[in-house]
Length: 159
Image (cartoon, rainbow, N blue to C red; front, side):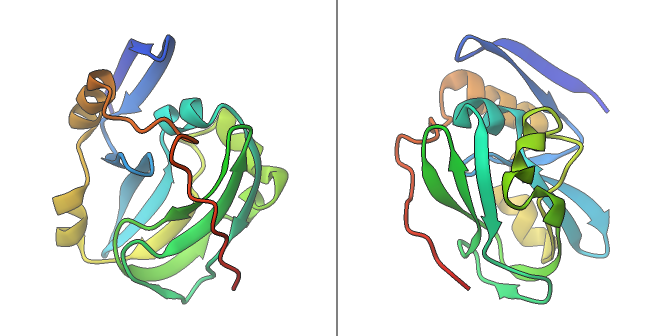
């Protein structure tokens, strides 16, 4: 595992681990678990951009079938409230329930250690839309990162 580190991300140090795939629109990382199962979490850049978590509520549960861009969770930060969507279709295998509610605050320090949810999905689809760690760092340094809260989606979808 190699770490890519830059001190040029909104005046802060940002870390990208090259063992993950990255999805810039939601600032998610994805880790391959085998058998078409992927674990998703928030990237360090995503944590920096939201400037602090307040509350999180899952919009899915294990067994749910999701289409790309379906809501996975509702997130309240110090900047905005918005839905986080899944980048690809798949079946929800697990959710990290200890992050629900104010438990989400743990991600401010453990953004790579804690995952949010797991999906069983088509690996070809994943590889076509995610970036490698190096590509993600380049995108961040080019300024391609959407500043969370600027265009936040505030429609909350209940189960």
